[in-house]
Image 1 (cartoon, rainbow, N blue to C red):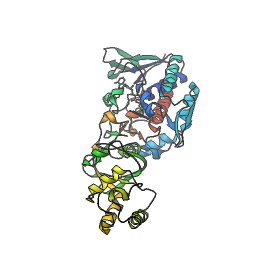
Image 2: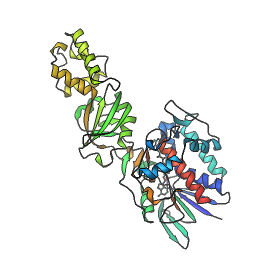
Image 3: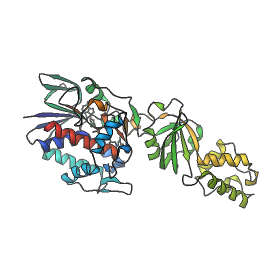
Image 4: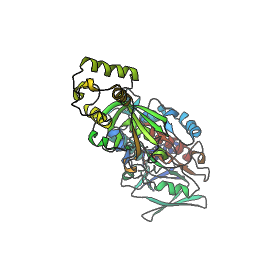
Length: 408
Ligand SMILES: Cc1cc2nc3c(=O)[nH]c(=O)nc-3n(C[C@H](O)[C@H](O)[C@H](O)COP(=O)(O)OP(=O)(O)OC[C@H]3O[C@@H](n4cnc5c(N)ncnc54)[C@H](O)[C@@H]3O)c2cc1C
């Protein structure tokens, strides 16, 4: 009987176990999970709703140092692969206007319940509280040691430990050292899908404000990315989906003073249109104060902070006291208010890991090119998806492919 051991009982590890069990009904499949339960992170996904995949799966929604290999994987992973995997277990799903796929009942706990039921049905041996500390290969088998002192023998091993993001959910980065034992190397690792810290006291008074805008990322003065959506202003910088998405592009650039984020408060109007709006107001109400003249345009607190930062003060000034230079400055800042990026929040606040084990060290079935029988899947690899269900889709699908191959 074939012994398959999966290290890590997260999204990828569970999918791999189910896929292996479907492929070989006689295989003995064990999941070794460091925490006291499997799938803990799944419960936190999508704000408790679990955005499990996306109708639009494209390599454009993923980042990797090895774009070419990543694209080859993604091309073989249509959204139907995730949907069918779950439908097969009885989970109904539906998508929102942006194509984000959720369980029909919008409960992450239901996704985990369905997965746990499948693990039970396929008689998968789930061992919790078994954090793997070492792994060796001798006499055609793997020997896996856990922190409890137990040792497990395996013909095939699937490494599904996740990366370093959100370590309180078990993914503390210990998987990289296990892979390194077989010669695997990682690209530079950084917190990704994570809030961005910015320089400047302006943010202190803006905590909690959400603005619909376009956010641009500049690296060394050049535009590196752009996201439109609801940006959340915080006392340290920016959060929300646009900021999280842009954080994927920061890599080593954060905290070096060469990255900036720019906010366009009127993404659907060009400079001239915004200037006309401002000029018309001033013409119509010349004796109105700066405090009132721009009401109704953008968030009041944001506007006042902007005027202050531009030294267009005091707010009791009348509109007709604004000079041409001041109006030009205000309009260009409304169209692009730039802030220096000083870094990102830590791993604790990151949804995923940027970078990972190099893709040219595994084959199309996720099997190590250095050690036959060892598979590496999920977030530990150098593939990072955007917000929108792309990371779970990657975890399930890489697990499905590796589980099948390991069992064949
Ligand atoms: C708050 C939050 C919300 C998210 N929301 C979404 C979302 O809605 N949609 C989406 O697509 N993605 C989302 N993500 C990202 C997504 O959850 C992960 O990319 C995905 O879970 C990665 O799956 P994985 O199996 O590779 O790793 P993980 O899910 O991290 O699982 C790894 C497992 O391995 C275990 N482990 C680690 N080391 C060892 C060891 N040495 N021995 C034994 N066990 C070990 C861990 O305890 C863990 O259970 C979110 C992430 C977070 C943190």
